[in-house]
Image (tube, rainbow, N blue to C red; front, side, top):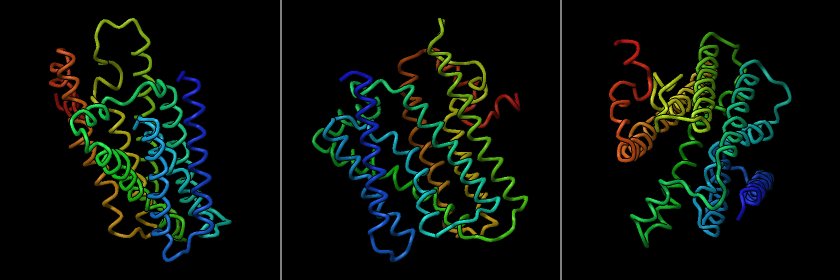
Length: 287
């Protein structure tokens, strides 16, 4: 299937997902709003999984990470019958929308179509064999869905609170904005690197001189910022597990997998790893 045909197909799949989500939100009973949202999120993940299984490409799920949090905004606004928006709400809506659309567009720009599947998914398929469908659903689809669901739960507190805007909100908004900025700069420089007449296989200029994984750093900052933005809105204490779990995923699973692959493929990565911090630019600050 050509790249353009793949883009049309993936767009249709996600239009179907959003439409299914809107239908479920309208007709499912409402025991508790966040339980209802969790049920919808899981059902939509099952739809995505079915499509990725049919197309034999787990990368069909990748766009879900950035699209669904944007849909959460409409869920809370509709379910809570919000007609007026305070500063905290408007900041959350604006920053999450920018994050969602930027990340989704960047994914589309770098996606090579259904003929290409993320190397991590291919490795899992080769390693797990007959058990891959179970690993695919639980590890590649459901686990990230649950992480993003819990990381986005502070939206509930933000949308129900009438507490005045505070300096803590300003800090949260700044951290969210910084996360988006770090990701944007990292993605732009990586795109320039891939399209340049490069003499090395390792990007080591711009923001990549200070952090080996600006994309993951930006994601961590964004989700922690959303939680901070909800603190003075009266966020439930257990909502902190969302950004904690996101951070643990990147630090102990995603980054080690990527770095092991880069060390095996590129001999110069060992020196880059020695001189450049994994996330926070501590080696640059304290050298």
